[in-house]
Amino acid sequence: MSKIVDVADAVGGIADGATVASVGVIGWVTPDKVLKALGDRFRATGYPRNLTFYFPVGTGDAQGIKGMDHVAQEGLMKRIIAGSYINPLDPKTNRRPELMRLIRENRIEAYSWPIGASMHWLREVARRGPGYLTQVGLGTYIDPAHGGGRFTARATEELVRKVEFDGKPYLYYPSWPIDVAILRASTADEHGNLSFEDEALVSSNIGLVLAAKASGGRVIAQVRRVSGAGERPASIVTIPGMFVDAVVVDPDMMMSTDTPFDPAYFSGLRCPLSALPKPVQSPDKVIAARAAREVAKRQLSIFGFGAAADIPLVMAEQGMFDDGALADYWFTTEHGSYGGVVMSGWQFSANINPDAILDGIYQFDAIDGGLCEFAALAFAQFDRHGSVNVSRFGAANPGAGGFTDIAQNARRLVFTGTFTTGGLDIAIADGRLDIRQDGRISKFVRDAESVTYRVFDGVRHRGQTALLVTERAVFQVTSDGLVLSEIAPGVDVRRHVLERMEYQPIQILDPLPVMDTALFR
Image (cartoon, rainbow, N blue to C red):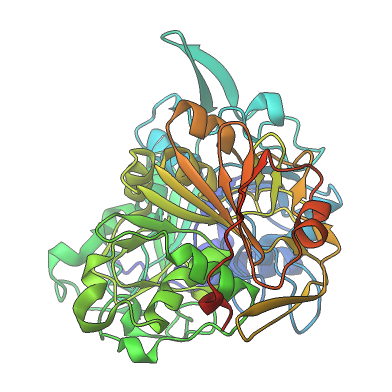
């Protein structure tokens, strides 16, 4: 019998109290039609109720591809565990995602795990193991001593424990069953065999399916098209049909936010480097251009969201990839696209012209194994103890994403971000930086609101090197504190740097080098 069903029928069997797992990466591989149908069913009938949702990665953009925001409804959602959360202001409504409102108002039980743990945990569920054991995240926000990843007061259960094994401390994530897995692929046949041939990412979809089936659960797949049985080579069928219970077809699904379909993201068609978007002149571009000087050839480099993601595009604009030189730069993100050029904004996570696309769980094997030697990551706060925060600050609750795994296991780190935020107004011209109005909020705080990674410990105990790059100053990170090592032309050290910090660098180089004026032209 054919497994192709109507979307309402696909979600109709989800029972009260079930655990529903799904994954997408912003807009990439997001099963939006199925998640919307589940949300619509609850609005129309009031059922199913009190579901636990498990999202290894922030799924959807909460705007055109709503993803997890479709199911962010009181009564439908009792609990959510997510590797990251989507937190942007909608430019049309000027509102943040509904899921953020539920979290801020303590309407649901909300937890956030590092993406590496959220993916590797699926492997333990799939093999019916007792749970996931790791040292990644000790001493950070996911450590029970620092909150255990709880994001609301209602989240009282201890989902992560600190244990000792062979005389060493570990974080332990006990496994529990998944009742329903919802995923997206490119193509299915009537038997449910799934392939991802025109998707930019696979993410943790394979682990999701195996975990659900090992738990005795159901698997619902959303696809773009249906093929005849046997029409595709078996080598491109990633998920066997015997593991799939229902298939929903959506021929019009977006590839990702602002991208209906573009084969350059899976190298079905190569994009000329001259056609790549050019970052506009801005503080982020200055930061990316300075950080780009730390990128080495033939060293696997991983880039995070924000100004860090602009680095490859700035390098492309500067002609550093011309005449085949791109092959000498090995780029990836936490989601498994290798080679080509890392994209920024809503297209972040995928690469243009990739050479390979790795399953998400295996990607975090590579990250945790230290294969990504160089990492460029954003920061929201950096405190006097060397704690970097990207997981919770102000009204934002984005979670750590892959930050903790990447930062703990890379050898060379560059942290990127503007010096202040909230109303920052900067002019960049003629080789100078003009701070017309500083931001209301300094990112250099005495005590970070959340600890996503402890850099001083990494420098001291793991031999890491770290640099902190902003638009107005560059700091070397030592095991004891920050050393102010560069200043932007046009910037007053005392007024624009030292007085805007809640603590002081342990040293200022004398003479203090000036950042290259070419960065400001």
